Amino acid sequence: MASAAQEWESLAETIVACRKCPRLVAWREEVARTKRRAYRNDDYWGKPAPGFGDPQARALAVGLAPGAHGANRTGRMFTGDASGDFLFRALHRAGFASQPTASSRDDGLELKDLYIAAVCRCAPPGNKPTPGEIARCLPYLEQEIRLLVNLRVIVTLGRIAFENTLRIYRQPGDRPLPQSFAHGAMHSLGPSMPVLIASYHPSRQNTQTGRLTEEMFAGVWELARSILGNP
Image (spheres, rainbow, N blue to C red):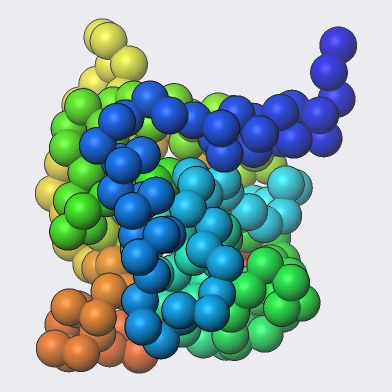
């Protein structure tokens, strides 16, 4: 019987090798070939990005998808772009990350009691995966949730992450789960299930317009920390 470590390794290898969605494969590889001028000397990852963090984590953060010049470049979720800069400042402040920055897979960052994943693992054009692409990718998140045996709280970053995380927990015949997305709202998924906290996504569209401020985002992670207790 495979150990938990072997299951995590096998899942990561499966994600990285995935080519289920032709549109996303073509886009992520084209971005990796053409590059952004600021990163023209970088070797882009150009493959699906697996989740990362503490396999014994009690907290899970779920994003939408890798950024074209963030995780699609660096190979690690929320690493190397403005969304990640905003996220890791908040995680460090709340005691979930060893440092407030994330620039590359070998930057020394360690997550504490937290695992970071996403609904989609390939960078989508316009940051908009199709429903079919989400459906093909969602089983990877479902497997990560199954492997996170200590999971007590899930923070969903954006409406798509919120709705699709609920989809994982909604089984035929179950009572209806919460449908209303609101920043900072906390939802029960049922007895012995993790608590779900909804948050706006830390995208530039939200942070530069003031829809999501540093203090608003800090409040989400303070709420998660209050559920778990001190680090």
